[in-house]
Amino acid sequence: DVTTDPLHADLLEIAREAAHRAGTLLRDGRPADLTVAATKSSPIDVVTEMDIAAEKLITELIAARRPEDGILGEEGSATEGTSGVRWVVDPLDGTVNYLYGLPTWAVSIAAEQDGERVAAAVAVPMRGEAFHAVLGGGAWATGAWEGERRLACRAAAPLDQALVSTGFNYVADVRAEQAEIARRLIPLVRDIRRGGSAAIDLCDVAAGRLDGYYERGLHPWDLAAGDLIAREAGAETGGRPGERPSGTLTIAATPSVFEPLQHLLTDFGA
Ligand code: IPD
Ligand code: CA
Ligand code: CA
Ligand code: CA
Image 1 (cartoon, rainbow, N blue to C red):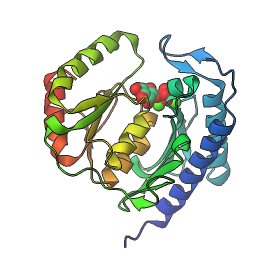
Image 2: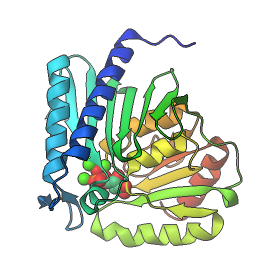
Image 3: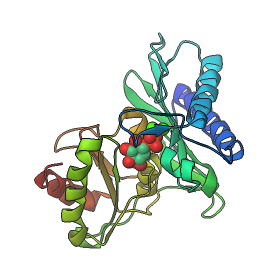
Image 4: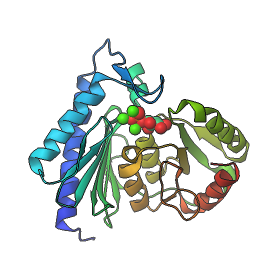
C-alpha cells in the first residue's frame, strides 16, 4: 500500500469532487439548442456558454476550499495564489464533440505544488467513468463498465501493432502539417484514432485502451491531469527527445511504443 502526502490527498479529493460536479452540470444542463458563444484562436476554435458555466463552478468550488491557491483555467481564470499550489483546469475538454452531442468529452483538473503535478482528476460523464491519480499513488478509475480498478498501461507491443490516437489543434495554419504527419504514420501502426478530447486520450493510454497518443499544440489545461494519470499507470510521457510534454509536442505511450513513436514523429518534423 502507498502512503500519500496528506496535502496531495486533500487536493485529489477537491479535484475529484469539482470534476464530478462540473461533469454533472455539463451532462444534465446541456441546452438542446446549444450554439457557439464565441470563437477564439481561429473560426474552428469554439466556446459555448457551458464551457464558461463549468469553469465558474470549478473555480468557485476551489476558491471556497482553498482561497490561497492559484488557478489557471482555459476560459480565462488566472489567479496567482500564495500557497504554492496551482490548479490547472479544462472545464470541458472536447467542446466540439459536446456541441454536436457526441459523448467523448471530459472535465480535466490537476493540482500542482511548486510546479509539479501532484493530483489529477478527469471525469467522463457520458461513459459513467472517472480517472484519478496522485503523485506516487498510482492511477485509478471508477466506472460502470470496467468497474473500480488500478490502471496499468498496455503490455509491450511493436509499433506496427500499436493503436495510436492523435488530435489536431485548432490553429488553422498548422493543420495541414498535422495531417501530413498522420499520413506518414498511418501505414506504420495498427491504426489511428482521433477522439476529440486530449484528456480522454491520455486516460485511455493509462487504461490500456490505446498503445499511444501524440498531439502538437496542446495547452497546459489539456494535458496536466492526463499526463499524471498516464505516468502513474506506467506509461511514458514526453515531448521531443529529452523534453517534457508541452505545446510543442506531447507523447504518451506504453514504454515499448514510446521511443519508436517519438523517433518517427521527430523524423516527420513534429
Ligand atoms: C481540444 C481537445 C482536442 C484537441 C485540441 C484541444 P477543447 O480541447 O482536447 O482533442 O485536439 O487540441 O484544444 O478546446 O475541446 O477543450
Ligand atoms: Ca477550447
Ligand atoms: Ca482542451
Ligand atoms: Ca476546453
